[in-house]
Length: 312
Image (cartoon, rainbow, N blue to C red; front, side, top):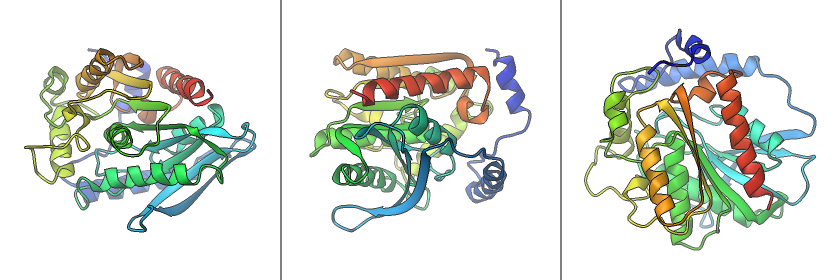
């Protein structure tokens, strides 16, 4: 399968994602992040963000978040809790900054980006605990944030998609809140890593099946038996009562087929699913290749979904 010619130009330089050298990769990513921050354009008028540390209801957790809001949006507005990608071991609040800016600006919603704890230092359930704490905090503080508590969604990209789906499961299984939207962008959902696409792209750039298996081992602390659904959402036996779900996949992505399978299972229990598959693309293309035609199309479609679901 050939990669789109425009996207291929963004793969000339290797992308830091060495699962055998997590600390070294983090240092390289930090250097790249400094350069990106220096090159950022000013925010659009009325768009604001700030960082803060939030706590859970019991005061046991302290979770860093970045909150984006469009002061020109009608109040109260919808909100999205978002989880960055990074194979459970990389990434921070800068990783998906541009995406979150775009969501807040164009979808007129508050975005709470979560700096969840990373593996292998903090394996499951640390990231899911942080994510659920952020969702509960948003519900408790909705009025202060100008958010309609009945219009809250959860989303994530790649490993962040696993945390997003797990957060939806936990919200459904506990005291809520009921969610209006569920956004999964080339999500990691299945720790068994046995799909055709895992094998098809077992050795590939910028992401492959071999790295995926190492990722899950680090996230699960080396455990592979009896994995909980909150750790690996594909393990959930019951997918009923999910909110309307958007799932995006990339053709040349080892995670492609597990996302497709998850979409099919949601459809079988009558969940509304909006499925977007991008041909000739690779994992993370809309972050790796900013400004490309396919990346712009993908981001526009994500914004359209959030606008529709969180404005009701």
